[in-house]
Figure 1 (spheres, rainbow, N blue to C red):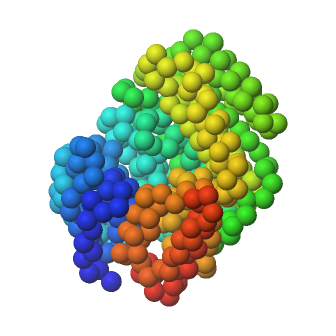
Figure 2 (tube, helix red, strand yellow):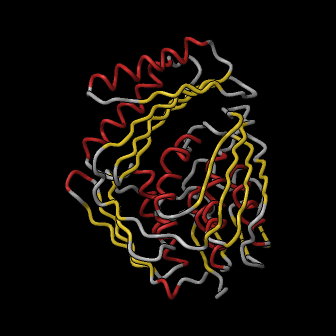
Length: 352
């Protein structure tokens, strides 16, 4: 099945998520895709370096022919020429563009093909409008491990805006299959972790972040494991990530430091977001809720999970997946603004 799929890049949330999800699905299904109005809802539309890096990374997995693959282009054509091939890959964004988003673009295609792969991505590891690498490490990857995938993620250097220069390594044991997830109820809290990440800053910055986390969690009676990471980096930077693992639930919250923004203020953001999520009763945070759509579309059976908010990102990724795959998806709005997502792939129809 290689009929051309047409995607309007200004649909839904109208951002880079449409591009990344489309090229991942094109690589996995072998179906060609054209995207018009790329990032049409952004103040600066068109492909930016991090989106271009994700597109070219996905293309390298399946020998895809590309048209419109240039910075600023509002049109992209992606034509896979072969099935996804496991192997050793290195992708250099060349800027502080988000390395975690490039990782997410290639992770599922490589996990669903047979054979082990290694992926190295150079770029930004802790940048605005992107999950920091600890989010993937402590939230996204554990959820996929629960679904039976074999993934190990580490990073040797941090990359902050504007210098970038971070480096992420991922080991992927391709299995060719993924089990469904049942995350309707999150169960008891098993572990609450806080990562205090700094590069080229005085030691007291990390200490102030540590103190703030301890005070915030003590106030709500939660035990937290704090891990301070001083990472090599071309430039200075700081980030805080709070990650929760429950019996059947995963969530993470983060904040990246800014010039003249006190570390206490940086740290308060993820602590407050954790508390809001905890009160919601949802099994996943709102970002994981949309990040699970693509992998669960390839699961061997029906999956379900709950989110504290039904976002436009969630609705958009569901829409993109349904352009490629015959899956049944239902989003049930719940009291308080949350939602229950149920997804039932029609396994025999998946063009893998």
